Image (cartoon, rainbow, N blue to C red; front, side, top):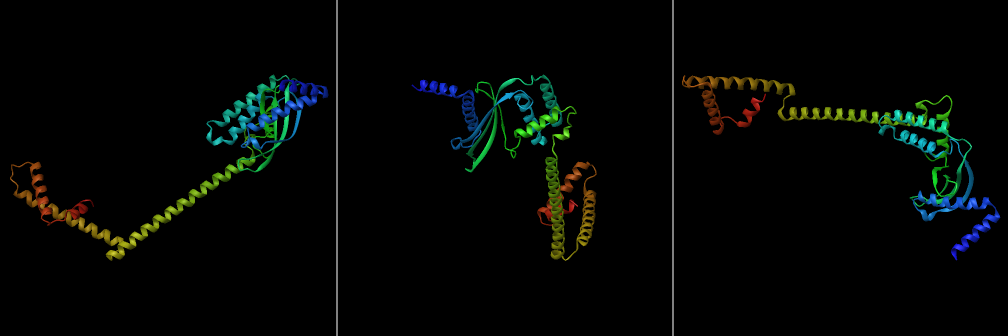
Length: 292
């Protein structure tokens, strides 16, 4: 029964004219493809659909449009892509070669321009305009692009880029890096450099303050300036070394002559260990003094 109803509908539509039938197929394709890109597909509500013949050109060839999209992807991620300009050159060449091979004026299918409203991921209702380029039977959608000027990589941006690439005079790589984006990058880099400089200055100030605090603490605690402490440490080191040398000299005199140097060192080391164990010499003090 349902099949009969569909057939009758098609008969009625055919009788009304091929334009109505074409629009019906276009609406079905537009609804199907639009719901694929929505956060909340159930919020979809069609507003208007216009179907036109797709006559082959650089503006509706799926391969050229897809390649132009790749160039935009590189632009937006240029700092994360290895040899980006080399890749752009390769994609440019691909577009020019494809454009030279096109059979301009050939009917390839349909261009479906579709306006609808739907909710975004925050639940707000937006009105969107989309372009779908499909085959002659409205089965396969070759390419999808936004017709909203505010959207990145919208259809108008892509066709402008394609025209720049396929123009007789060609285009330079810098044309792909639009002035606004370059200015934005420059501002970002300048901001990062400024933050690093500020952070570096803060670190330097913190180090200076810490050093000043330590110096003040030493002077307050010991009643001596840093310079005085250094002088005292030098004197202590010298006196200690002289005392140790004197003790070693005295011990060496009482060591039997037949003892070798290794035995002498062992005896001297044993002496100092004895003195330390009997608290005659403070081990920590000796360690600190020997490290000067």
